[in-house]
Image (cartoon, rainbow, N blue to C red; front, side):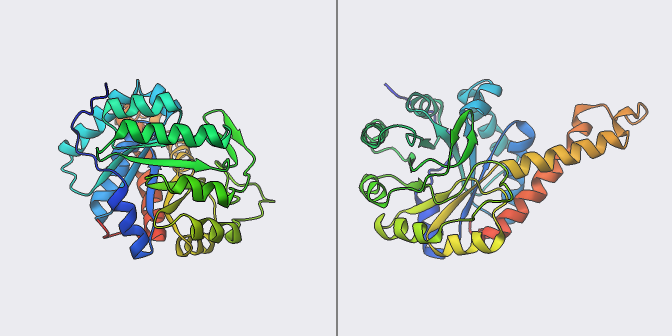
Length: 296
């Protein structure tokens, strides 16, 4: 029996429907620790922007589980007086992880069955929808493996089969992740770019729901804008925030600020602050590009 603890999270359903109607995309920012979550929440509040906080299975394990992250995020929303809509979303979850996240109070889950035979993927999506029932919890499905690496799962960026997309979109899912040449992580120099012909085919057969663009790091701005025009309503960003955090933290250390014993530069709150500010700046850059500022 699944019980869903009442937290101040919303599902993606209305949020992404509004994005599709308004021709913009909502940012899905993966969180990796307290600094990430705080940066996501404060930037969204300061810009009146709807936001999706994504959590991978690996990041959940690192942060002591789904219950810990859900409770911490809910408490931060209260403490920071966050009023914009916030989705707590499981990113690339297995079937069991989706159930665990729902039990922990997540308002949205992504079941990644793209590495399974389509029939199995379809059945598990349908089963999860039955488990969710009439509760306001959104479900993201995936067809066609996204390239790159995500928590140990490697994909070659296969293009999604429009027929499979059409079939799974007839289920009451909220959004569909479909392979259109995108990859997770940093893009190689020889990357061919997004396949807009494939995106058009997918968008034309999935009805009113939109498409999630995974691997949002490093895609040229013009391609992002065109993807939104063609039906992308949710864009995932993780690696760029990680790189920004790393660069800012490295700069702080290389400048020797962590060695300042008078100002206690070694204090983790000071050591991590430049990275926190760098994440905020990167999120602001992305939500500006996606067109979601003042859409809360």
